[in-house]
Length: 312
Ligand SMILES: [Zn+2]
Image (cartoon, rainbow, N blue to C red; front, side, top):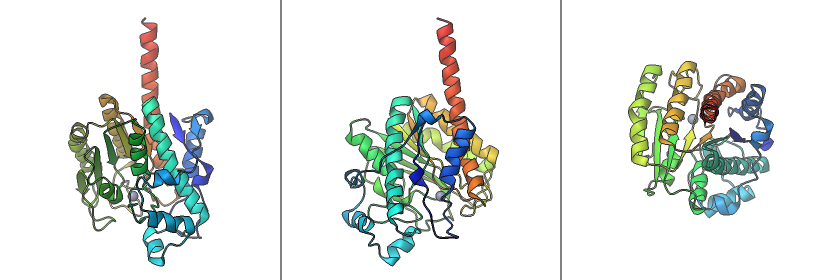
């Protein structure tokens, strides 16, 4: 599978900051060490252009980010201190999703090893999300004439409020968010479909809800492309989540999503989303699960191809 990654995804943050910045580099290392991603399959994005960012974001927000003139309130809401490095990182991560979408349309599946920053609105950022990479990527793909209909499958434990708001008036983009009712954001937006789970939801509840809703999502959305926000913060022990999905449950979740998309023949771009285990390494290990499942898929496709060739 082709993956988008840039060393600039990882930047220094003030000591003790709760955003687990190292997880992106650790995920890249795990995928390399396990042989899941060959160096030749890693694509390094450029920073997203301001023109593409304008497809989603207001001039005032972009201006404040470009010039470092965020108000204290805007910075507090964002949850990250502004820096040149943060701006560059955020632009790289957006382009990673733009490029992952393009690669997914070409190869059926691709991933960005960052992104899924679903709390970013047109005119402000919040919850560690500067830009809404998913919205930019969908609008770019549409502007290029690559897709008409899109769906966002957002299984991060926090509601995809920015994405919901950005696509509220877009009948060609279906937004599905399955999240914890009592988690941030405390004032939810309205997605095309919201499924709110109660605290402590375990594998049975979580996977049952997914199985109940995913087929309907794909039927209603009829997407030419899915962007999947594979946040791992529904997993038990997450410091910002309130659910109790097990590691095996996470594996089952990724299989359920990727199986369904393959069955429907829908290209999928994976993004990382949130994850806040006790260490960045533990979090990165969980993010790698989706890649193991996706690699299994690729092997099945390849061996099927080999069999059919052998069979003439
Ligand atoms: Zn989250």
